[in-house]
Length: 165
Length: 150
Image (cartoon, rainbow over all chains, first blue to last red; front, top):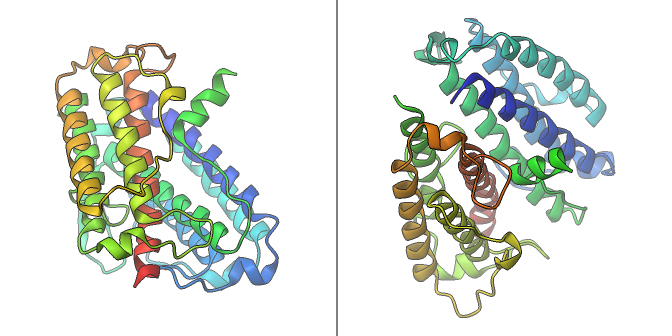
């Protein structure tokens, strides 16, 4: 992938995340935090996990190896998630503004939460994070249906359609 | 690694390889029984079988477009009737569609990726990335349905 491909992918990721959080806005506090028996239990926990992953990989892109796990109770409501996510998005934008086709091939090392050392190219890491968020957006949409709430489409081709209309 | 090789690597990881985001799509389907596939554990939600047929439908569309065909999205059954579809048959069709897509991508040159999809404004790269994201998105949903089906 080229630097422009990554920039497009992250504009899409931001658009899709915003559509998902907007779809969660009508939920009351009980529905938002209700354990639905999935990997991350509630919609709140799934969103926090997704946000946390975007943050920790943003740090890893920059050579850092934070060890803080996601703390779900730090986010009592959607507004708290959106506020933190906005900061992470701004950080992503700042890094992505400076990438080049060449810098995407640069290998970056980091330690995971278990202190194991890994090393991947920046481009590979960036693609991974976007895929991870997409995977969990699919789950949030299913959880919205579990709650009887209105789901929303976040398809990449819909994003392109919106850009051209 | 050439751009098409990187795309193939991403497609393969998301489909049946070593995915980073969570379980790969094909790996999630392992061990799913006919009964589980046809179950509808979430009211008004799709079954795993419906999702797999839906994924296969769009992988096939992308494979044909990448191969040079014009495919009108309005002519594609987004959510096909699966009442006569067996689970084994659906998985086999999915395997074949993924294989056709991989073959079509492997035949592309780097320059081809920037060309527009036949009959569309977006690039062939974007079309393939759309298929990748679509697979990953629905894999997340299948993981939930698989757990709910027990």
